[in-house]
Amino acid sequence: AWLYYRLTEMVDVNVGYILDALERSPEHTNTLILFTSDHGDGNGYHRMLFKDNFYEESARVPTMACFPGKTPQGLLDNTHLVSGLDFFPTLCDYAEIEPPANLRGRSLRPLLEGTPTEWRRYLHAQSKASGRMVVDERFKFIRYYGSKTTQLFDLDNDPYETRNLAFDSAYADTCKRMAAEIDRHEASLDNVELPAHLSKRGS
Image 1 (cartoon, rainbow, N blue to C red):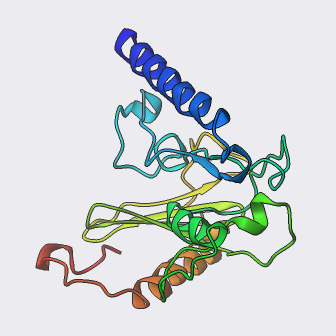
Image 2 (image 1 turned 135 degrees about the vertical axis):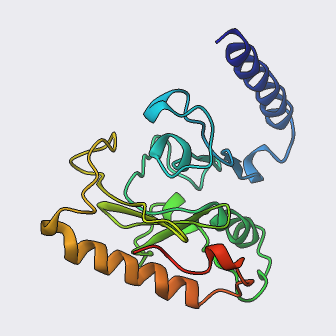
């Protein structure tokens, strides 16, 4: 706990140095700030300490954005499904640079500025070679190649992910729909061949 506190304090102090320098700069009102992280850690939730899992403590990472005069103050958006892949096209958008073709991410500018826009219905994630996760506005579905492990969580009614609904017949159609979305997404990727022991998904 002491080490975690000291590391957090170090990040806070150094982010403060950066913001202080920016506020003294003439570019202060012409700079977009995105503050985020690459992943969370378990910190004991679900008896896990680190990452490499799909529980919310590890997979869901908060992001803060500030652009004086362009992003509304105090706007909280916890409904749109956002990926780390969205940051690059967002920076290109604000810099008025044409992003590379075929990017998987989308510019967050409409969301940051509160502009109505059509957004993605599903969000995908991968853990190492075998783990796949897909999330929609309510459910999280998880499966692993080469394993029978399958999980479905209702994030609206079970936000701490304590009840696996994957084998509840009432949610069979939801599992089927989410599994089909993983298959659709996988087919759209330029995947490398998996090792033989991971090439077939468990039932």
